[in-house]
Amino acid sequence: MSLSTTLLLGFIAGVTIVIGLPIGRMRRPAPGLRVFLNATAVGVLLFLFWDVLAAAWEPVDAALTGVHDGSASIGPVFGYGGLFATGLSVGLLGLVGYDRYIVRLGRNTGRGGPGAMAVTEHAARSSGIATWSPARRLSLLIAVGIGLHNFAEGLAIGQAAASNAIALATVLVIGFALHNATEGFGIVAPLAGESTGDPATRPSWRFLLAMAAIGGGPTFIGTAIGHNFTSEPVSVVFLTLAGGSIVYVIAQLLGVAGRAKRSDLVACGLLVGLLAGFLTDAVVAAGGA
Image 1: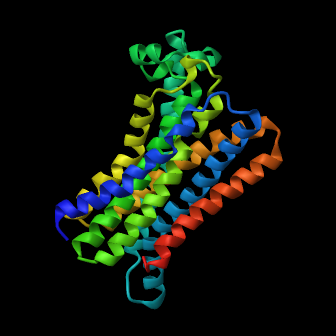
Image 2 (image 1 turned 180 degrees about the vertical axis):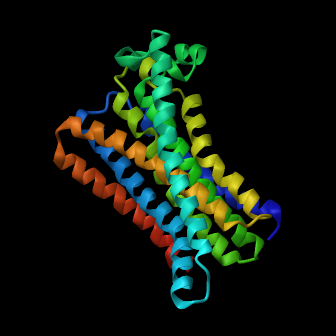
């Protein structure tokens, strides 16, 4: 398969992330709907957390099997295991440190804390991320985690296309495109919960498209790289980085869900998000990927 065709497949797989963006501009969503949307985003992210770590653990599992049956040495176990632990640690602790840095920077400029919830789009542009509301910063962190995950997906598409496995590449594109459609919703769910109807709190289309580029763009980049370069260690690194960042974001969203005191809506939202994730994954599995 040619590089241009492969890049087109990567673009199609990544661009569907924009489907969920309009939810971020909802006007005055009902409190119950906010809770449900937040919980559904958690469900999607829980699926992604399972998905990325399961894929990242496969080389470690294969290496352990090789040691057990005597066909391989213990070296790959420590190698892949080290990459797994390092990527997960950097993804999680890196976001913790970055988020604390941004909050501290906002306080130093007088724009952090509770008052940041009402920051205007103009202030955000003129003063940087430190002036963003907590919901917008959380949206950015979700986009980063999803982007790392989608880079690894792009590598898989590129590798399948480079080996002329056209049927597999097509199924991967369809499955990952469905994945990205649900992931776009996960990115903007915190923004829907923040909206009060005031234009100052509604995210602009420019902001939403920027988040989509961060979350979906790596699918295209990964496809381009995967067409010419294959590396299982690189995939493990990016998958575990994504896993670490996603688990941090999940913890933040669960804190928001816990304050709502609506366990019924939280449970329903979690279920919907999880089922949506597994449903889109089933498309890829059905194609033999």
